[in-house]
Amino acid sequence: MSDTAVTAAEDHRAGWFELFFDLVFVVTVSVLSHDLHGDPGPGAFGTFLVLFFPAWWAWANLMVTVNVFGSANPRTQAMLLAAMPALGLMAAAAPEGLGSRAWAYALGAAWVRLMAFFIWWSRARLADDPLPIWRPLLYFLVPTAVWALSAAVPNPQRFVLWGLAIALEVLLLAVRTGLTRGFYDELAVEHLVERIGLFVVIVLGESVFTVVVTLADHFTVAAGLTALLGFVVVAELAMIFFVWGTANAARGLERAVSSGATGAIRDTVMYLPFVLVSGITVIAAALGTAVAEPHHHLPVGARWALCGGVLAFYTANAAIALRYGDGVRVVARWYLPCLVLTGAALVPACLGLPAWGAVAVAAGLVFVLAKLSKYTRPSRAE
Image 1 (cartoon, helix red, strand yellow):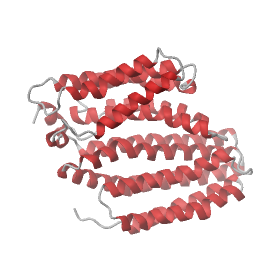
Image 2 (image 1 turned 90 degrees about the vertical axis):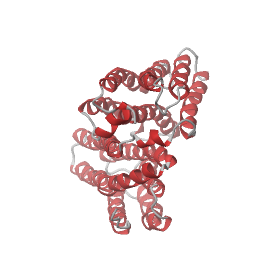
Image 3 (image 1 turned 135 degrees about the horizontal axis):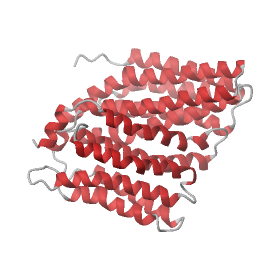
Image 4 (image 1 turned 180 degrees about the vertical axis):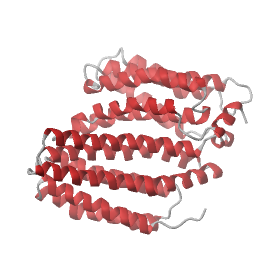
């Protein structure tokens, strides 16, 4: 095993430098979710997903990089420090990320990928390393060039290059050629679970922030009640994720790493958490809208955000559980009630009740699902 592997094996906890790095994402999530408040249309949801995914993908790649190289490694700390302005640029460009500031967003995306390339390139050049030299070239450097080139191309042709860069990264991750069993053995499961959990904390924290700030601007009894119910929603989602989700993730990733199930590692570390955190983000936007106007019916966009966000959160958790080896019947015991209760209770509540009532039903729904999730999960001794 290389010195890099030894460092990663010994460094199982997130370092303070990573936590400092994550402060950028507090701003990123806040800026990207701004247009989801009120009555967002399909364009607002699409813009959020299009701009959030490259930022998420950059964060996930940097997280895996630190996992492999170790958070105490001076090179990884230098990489994170150099990448922070890039992510800040992406966040600052996000309000017009598909318009007049798209060039700046593209340069930020290129910048952060270039920082990751340098550290992987230095490793791939080692003669005894299991990572082939072509992978960092194709996975990091080529997308860097495409993102940078897109900054000089006008809209809408620019977005074709964005799609090409993202597709190259996503598809290449599914190619196992060159990623030997020895490479995956280097992954520190504790660090992966902790880092994803901390990212979810950021998004949940942004949800609480949205509810409290909106209440400060609309300080009435009805708004206070709605904010309290909204807090219950966020707290129950946090309980589901941290009490049962992270424990299941730790067990599942341990099994995946030990058995060489690279597809399960990829899906549950890179792809599915994006769906989960997107769901939490749109739920937060809907809760903020409800607190602002508790006596009015939720606008159409906020209804989609609340119902769709709940479904996205639980669908991602169901998919993660299946990838970690939970049986279909076990997952169905809590996921099918989610589908039924959302369609039979939450959707009608959003249509027929004032905003505070819709949030109350959402709070009751996530409470019931939390209990179902707890009591229907199989007990595991391992």
